[in-house]
Image (tube, rainbow, N blue to C red; front, side, top):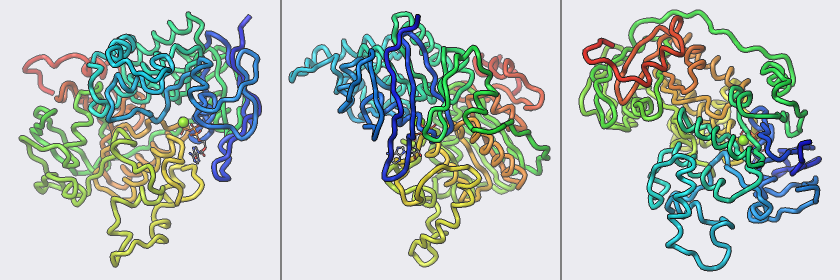
Length: 500
Ligand SMILES: Nc1ncnc2c1ncn2[C@@H]1O[C@H](COP(=O)(O)OP(=O)(O)OP(=O)(O)O)[C@@H](O)[C@H]1O
Ligand SMILES: [Mg+2]
């Protein structure tokens, strides 16, 4: 008989009159992995934060081991054995990894003396568990986003919790790290730890979860054993209507738009490719393979050591970001929080910041002009938001990603480099993004799409380049290549002399 360790009933939460939760109920058994699914803005993170004591519910009850409890803050939750990995990581960039693990952690120092000598030893144990081979003395700001994600996971583990909430823990993890996390989850489960697992990735849900609770518009719709529900049913419950994936349109690539030859930077070696008008060119590769570095070189962030580029057949050198912008090249960065959004600025300002010239004909920004320029893009992206003036920080994670996407579209670029554009985007909204990519191609734009999800590349692209260690290792026609072929070239070195 499963033993219930947590239950919540009829929880409500409003933010300045916006209802984030309207009657959410949920129960969790010891030793289960319980998925929480729902569209962007459905209330998953809000519910998670309430259980973790970080946000206070407006109404409703929370019981642990059958006893009603009131959480006045995250430390209260920790003492009851609840820890959380937030969707938007809450690490302190200027502190070291070890300090981040220890700070506000009741397992480390509840007294008023910090034992510095023990700090590194404490951190080292948990870093090892998540497979992060870095010095605990490194400042968090020097880590990659994937490494930061692992630090956050290590921190949650170090609290010795019985309930761990993981809010999209794999959104910036890849390959080995994901597998390691899944092994850790299995181990925690066998010790009776319960896990609330928030994710938009269907394959993860079916692989590691026991039950799934679906949320829609701030309410919980129901809970099902994962073995008894299909992916199609789950999507229907999330969106609340019949749903089927869109189809890829027929399109024809035009003349060459962008040609890069021999591009060599700090991270890239002799990269050559062409992008045609109306083409979607996919880039596959593992983390660190040079996918994002290619974007950085094209947008003028990374210096070109060697190489040549033409746009519309004319030599073009993106030697600064403003030059790249002037050439009509735009980049959707991989990490929306660190590289993209200004969290305290409004939704509207975040969209128009890169194109203020167009919004301010006489040096003064016309708010009306701004709003009418961005609204059509928000409609296409089904952005869920209250007011355009609200800070971006008040949006759900997936909706923040859509704001960044709208910023790129607003510039009407000739070449758009999308670095993992559907990170944290729900199943339905992914289709909205695919439709926009399709439309850009129909309009004769050139799109370069980086994605860790191979089905996404196969769905959207005409051709796919595979990268490994800063080089292109293979080029494929997306209509005929298989996922296995791509993976082979993403993981194995090219044979010397082999033409690619
Ligand atoms: N601090 C805040 N201030 C105002 N509104 C907020 C705040 N945090 C969340 N909201 C609103 O609450 C609703 C639910 O957001 P939540 O982040 O819980 O969604 P989610 O299901 O986690 O979505 P996602 O899949 O995009 O992460 C959204 O409409 C969001 O705009
Ligand atoms: Mg969320």
